[in-house]
Image (cartoon, rainbow over all chains, first blue to last red; front, side, top):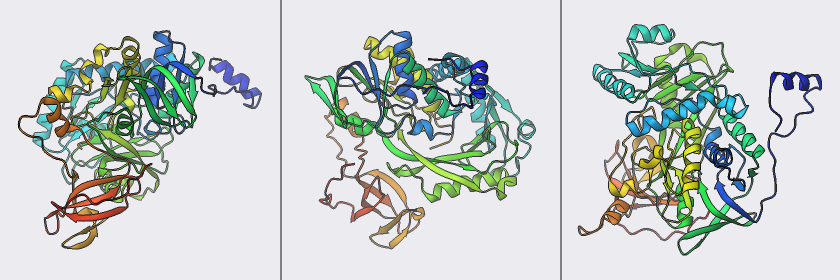
Amino acid sequence: MKGYSFLSLARQALGGHKGWPPAWRSPEPKKNYDVLIIGAGGHGLATAYYLAKKHSVNNIAVLDKGWLGGGNTGRNTQVTRSNYFWPQSAAFFDHSLKLYERLSHELNFNVMLSQRGVLTLAHSVHEMEGFRRWANAIKINDVDAEILTPVEVKKLVPLINLDCRFPVHGGFIQRRGGISRHDAVAWGYARAASALGVDLIQQCEVTGFNIQSGRVTGVNTTGGTIGADRISFAVAGHTSHLAKMAGFRVPVTSMQLQAMVSEPIKPCLDTMLTSSVIHMYVSQSDRGELVLGGGADVYNSYAQRGGIPLLQENVAALLELIPAFSRLRLMRQWAGTTDITPDTTPIMGLTPVQNLYISGGWGTGGYKAIPAGGETMAYTIVNDQPHLLIEDFGLERFRTGRLIDEGAASGVAH
Amino acid sequence: MLRLSCPWCGTRDELEFSYGGESHVTRPTLDSDDAQWSDYLFNKENPKGIHYEHWLHKYGCGRWFNVARDTVTHEIHAVYEMGEPKPDLAVKDY
């Protein structure tokens, strides 16, 4: 792999940018792999990267039925934060944020992490009291959180209308939170993994598992049968579908989470603003577009498109909070299929099938977990036991009742 | 926007209804073990294809009914009353 640098950029500029090599190889699938990962999204690619980098596994493939980073990795709104309530969640997601803080350097790929802060608004006295408890819990978890008064909110977001319906009573901010570039995260991991010898195979759909006496030995795909010692799947939006192929059930409901962007405007919002009461979050991308979203459509769906009622709700909430945006046009609206668990905590670790591992149920917040998700799943696959950071995220918690009811998982109420 | 046909009020916009999740889930007996109970409580069919589900006509007659809806196309294949058996529809394979 040729490193990206200022020098390489200058050299390529002189050559009219015609000499850039492909960022990753596209090999034909081999007959057998030591580890096979299904789903070339952020989590799958990161898992492959850490397997090769930290555990020296050198015969790995990542399969995807579509294109690399084309599922929820390329559809989310890029929020990177770790303001979680429960200790297990905070430890895991803050580890992820710390990995994000070093990721551009680690991957030699600029993921454009912008720690502009994630500001969560409160709209009543009682919610403000709840936020003090939440912020204190976060601080006890050794993560940064700061309570803001309405005056401080106004200073940070001058365009905000504090006296809107459900007036703003204040909020709390995680200053280390922010946004990053989701395509760069997928491409960065793909390029770095490919350089370490990982085979990235796109347009290859898994149609079934080969399971012999309770142990997985390979998969059937649209490109033929592929054998593997260990298989992991990270297929946001299709977790139930693949679990069913492997013969077990998961506590997942697939729903559409939509997002939309406005036309680009000059910089006017330099924090990530979110509110669970009015069900809306918004940030401004580096290109100047406002990126906004809110809750998920209420019914089960795999459609990868969002309904009109939620779109109207999101836009109405934004305009009530920031009336100055009322004359902007929306440019695009889309949706991703999110796998929601009953406690909004992901499902990671072992499955009822031996040598088959799961990373799913990420709901509406898997993007921020990509580095830690990949690192801990790599450990879990190699050692056939969950990494310490994810040992409470296993499928068995639904039987034992040790749920991690994480209201902070989505940032907005669902 | 979904358009649902309430068996009592006729076709209305999705906004009048609220969603109740999977239909035809059988509660296990009281002597069931933790595995059966948690399967009943948490695990879902969540099919990519036809889903049998409850809807409530919340801002209408206030009554529950069943819908068979495709989760990929959102096409509605059947609407039937609570307590009626699952209609025999061809399985969609996506």
